[in-house]
Image (cartoon, rainbow, N blue to C red; front, side, top):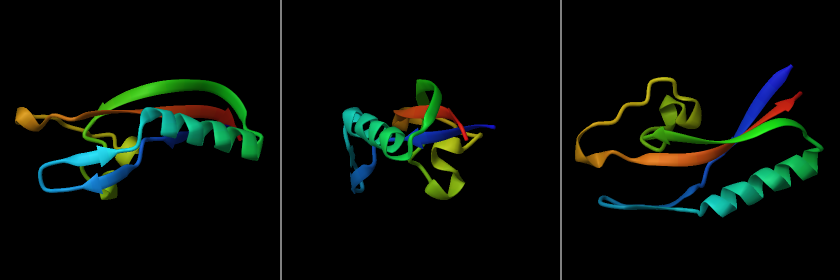
Length: 86
């Protein structure tokens, strides 16, 4: 069976007018650690770019199928998706 795991830079600070995130390298380090620690049989690794993935965690984050942008507050985020056999 093919599965996937996402590694997005975590939000480390959120304010009314700004947000701060970990670096993309931190997400990559997390992916590498997970692969090594669990002996993951990797099929593919990709960088995914989506709009507004941090808008509402309750709507699915990186797996939300209905992400929208609009107005001047467009915000695009990249994360790492690891496809693996599991």
